[in-house]
Length: 404
Image 1 (cartoon, rainbow, N blue to C red):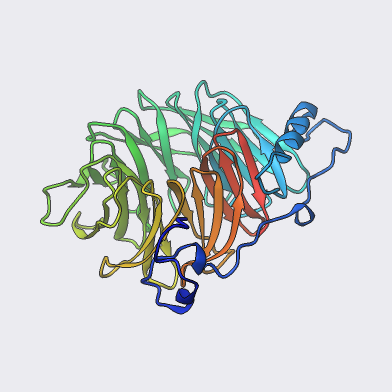
Image 2 (tube, rainbow, N blue to C red):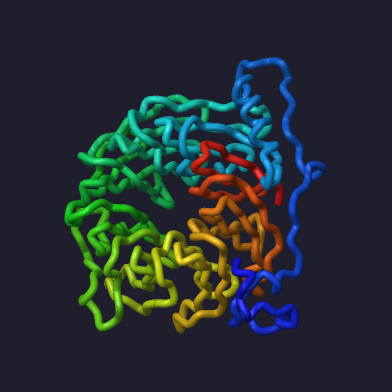
């Protein structure tokens, strides 16, 4: 937030959503104190514990650092934590992928952690299957691995000649796609590990990948500043969207974020700060939003508002109308914003993570701050939310769970 902004005035509390939200517009800021948190005690049995004795000592030492709020519990990797996901069918289970070349499956009920080893480089993205039974891990070693919830390796899938940085499950079947650093995408049948298609056409790495909501098309976003729409049955390019292919503005920087809305509509953001609304059926650009001045890192559709929230390195979250592409509200922060997230378990709430280590919760209907956590002394790289709470993953190697 920017406390020196002259527009800060407590009398603006009831003004329309179009106004920029600043610190003094906040109704209430809740800082969790020691009495609001439960740090699990060591039961004396190291077998199956989430952290060993030395990790527990590090945990206690770091939790007592000045200027940090205390989480409900803390979990540790030995490297930066790049990706965290709650299991979609059991919110008491979550997984993490990290720069220590491992992924882990954590159980909040019994305190057990399954360490998933085998990657030879950082695990930069993880995704649970829609039924919650399988975890996919993407490695900079150009390998995608599939695991069951007991930590058993099901398949080790290779295809791209360079890193695999993103993957996505088919919404209705046991099929997964992954984007490679060599500009190719690969699709596999996860039951037997067989390759079902190779998608070639990008001239640079694929950083975003998704099936359309109905599963009938594949959408990829690349560092070559283009997006492609593919036929999953034939591996053919249906449409290529790039600057100059339409009278409307498109991206002139690498594609950094993408989100599918309906069967045909999706939104994408890029390093140049542009956000576009596109149609996957015909490859057309519906509208372009030009409110950001730096890279767009994350996108979310806001249920009930027909709006999109965007997180940017320009230190802002902006909410714009999906139909008109006009800004509805803007929230400013002290540092770059890396993630925005909504959750069915917490209606009307927008969760925001920043490079300054903070996590905040907003009512996106009024852009009003509900809670703020000073979570980490290092940049946050990912967050996830379920009925179990808010997870924050950081460059400091820790994951913290916060109560909703």
